[in-house]
Structures are given as C-alpha cells and as structure tokens.
Image 1 (tube, rainbow, N blue to C red):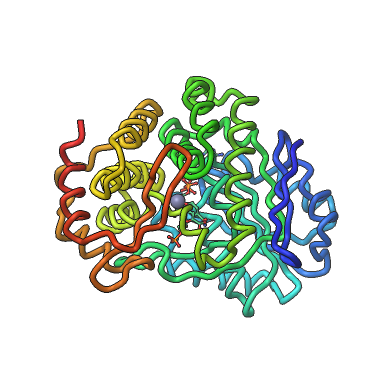
Image 2 (image 1 turned 135 degrees about the vertical axis):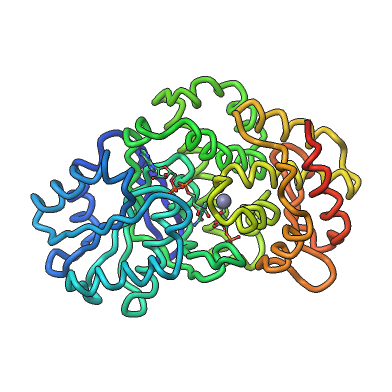
Length: 364
Ligand SMILES: NC(=O)c1ccc[n+]([C@@H]2O[C@H](COP(=O)([O-])OP(=O)(O)OC[C@H]3O[C@@H](n4cnc5c(N)ncnc54)[C@H](O)[C@@H]3O)[C@@H](O)[C@H]2O)c1
Ligand SMILES: O=C(O)C(=O)C[C@@H](O)[C@H](O)[C@H](O)COP(=O)(O)O
Ligand SMILES: [Zn+2]
C-alpha cells in the first residue's frame, strides 16, 4: 500500500493507494475518527454498485457503522441539481446529522456529486472519497466538488476537502475500455503540465496501462496523484498555480456542455481540448513540437483528437463564454510551452480560439 499526503494545514489528508482496501474500509474510517454514532450515506452509481458496493457495506456494518447507500444512474447526467436534491432527501430519510459523513464510491461523477452534497448538506459535513476509475486519481484529490448546469459545466460547486482518499486499485479491473482511455487522458495531462519524464514513462508503458497491468497502473496513479496534490497544496482555491490543472479544459468543458453531457466522456473532451491548447501555443509563437507530442501521445492511447464535424462552432464559442476563466475580450488558457511545462496566458484572442475550433474538426 502506498500513501501520499495532501498538505493543506488543518485540512490535510492522506491518499491510500493499494489493492483490496475496500473490504477493510472500516479500519480506515476508524483511523480517521469517522463517527459511528451518526449514520453514513454511501453514494455510488449502478455500475459501480453492481461490482463494488457489497464489500464496502459489509465492512462498514461489521465495523459498527450505520451505513446506507444511495445509487444514481451512471454517467455525467447524474451530476445535476435534481440528483443533488434526491441525495439530500436520502440523507434526511437516513437520519444524517452534522456528525455524519457522505462517502463517494465511484468515479468523478459520483465524487463531484456526493462531494457537493457533503459540502452543502447542513452547510457541510464530512466526506470520504473512494475512487473506482482511473480518472478519479484526479477528481478525488483537491476538493473541487460540483454539479453541472445545462449551460455550463461544474458551475454550481464548492471547495470541500475529503477526510481521506481510499483508492482500491483492484476496482479498476472492471472498468470498460473506453473509460480506461478516458481516465488516462487526465494522467497524461498531469505529465504534460508538470513532468516530462513522466510523459516518457507513459509513452513507454502505454500497453501495460491500457491492459491494466497492476504495477504500471499503481505507479501511474501514484505519479498523477502526486502532481495533483503538489499543485493543490500550493494553491487550494485556484488563485494562481492551480489553474494549470485546467489544461485542455476550457475547450473540453465547452464541448461537454454542447454535447449535452452525454456524447463525449470528460477525458475524451479534454483530450481534444489539449490538442486545441497545443494549437494555441503555436499561435503564440511556440514550436510545433509540443503540438506533435501532445497529439501523438493522446492518439496512441486511443483518445480522440479530432472534433466531430457536427459540433457547431458558434455554440462552442458561446459555451466558452460561460467558462469560469473567461474575462471580457480575451480568454485565459493554459498553454503548453514544452513537454512538462505550461504557462497561464490571459491574452488569448477570441478569434484564435474560433480558428482552432475549426482546425480541430480537420485534425488527421
Ligand atoms: N473534482 C475534480 O477535480 C475533477 C477532476 C477531473 C474530473 N472531474 C469530473 O469527473 C467526471 C468524470 O469522471 P469519470 O471519468 O470517473 O466518470 P464516471 O464517474 O462517470 O465513471 C465512468 C464510468 O465508469 C463506470 N465505473 C466507474 N467505476 C467503475 C468500475 N470500477 N468498474 C466498472 N465501471 C465503473 C461508471 O458507472 C461510469 O459509467 C466529470 O464529471 C469531470 O468533470 C472532476
Ligand atoms: O482540480 C482542478 O483544479 C482541476 O482543474 C482538475 C480538472 O481535471 C477537473 O476537471 C476540474 O473539475 C475542473 O475544474 P473547473 O474549476 O474548471 O470546473
Ligand atoms: Zn478534468
């Protein structure tokens, strides 16, 4: 078992990463003084519940916790205000109080949704992350929790750090292939923004990662979590540095919103977005190398780099205006300047972005 610390002063917490952790989860709850007196609510989705809910409930019950579960439909559509209300209803019916905790067992959708429920229920209760996707090495760390609005992704949210992240990597063995690639997209992002050696390692270990080789997977997740926690520890609330974690997301989030949150997976949308950012880098005078490497690595992991023709550029541009980083006139983008390096640019012109969106539809 590996352990990493997210260093946030009194809000610091550990990430436990290893095999078979779910069946012993009660021991970790004990270690973190999660209340046994107050009921817990485990939020998960139907696909995760089918494979991984029982050992969690068994361990918690055997450990003396009063746990019930709430199961949402799988997919981005569940990250909604309507689903949040249903969770609050379930929490009230189960008798949760201010000493209770909400537990997120699932991928980023469940983590963001359950996390926002924990941040808002009774103005904030304890929260535990139990990630079950590769992508969730990103989403379970750092405390960003949110639901979507039809017009803008993650626009209703909060910062609410978990008590711990309990990452049982054996759960990943049941992931569908498309979600494996989509999750690796954020891992590649962590390399591209911070660590050129990690990018090389990712390219050299592609086959192992795509086939869920346990050792390669654990190393990749550890490195990804390390980058995420180093960045978050320096800038918890995105006053500066943390924005680099948004590489590919300005365009990516707009694509997800235009697609009605049900065509492109998050990791796929940001893959296209990262190619878009690399194209913007060229407009800002950086060499073509970063574009070539970005596109090559994403394609080799089976990720999309071309925007389907049917996505209307005007609608994408309109969705971009709702981005949290949008300021009148110019736009803020995370621009890759070399492999493992990015800069935050506030001077990206709207017309360049429009041109890049069109170019993305012709990407080979
Ligand atoms: N808060 C953050 O910092 C942050 C960071 C990155 C992404 N996100 C958010 O995360 C979300 C995407 O997360 P995701 O890709 O994990 O999506 P997800 O939670 O929808 O999971 C992907 C799919 O895999 C299924 N699944 C999950 N675990 C499984 C398992 N072990 N076995 C079988 N099936 C399993 C789910 O049912 C779902 O269909 C997006 O909403 C994105 O905005 C948040
Ligand atoms: O943690 C962060 O900060 C990130 O930007 C990580 C992203 O991968 C993630 O998708 C996040 O939810 C995006 O945040 P947002 O503030 O742009 O909605
Ligand atoms: Zn993301």
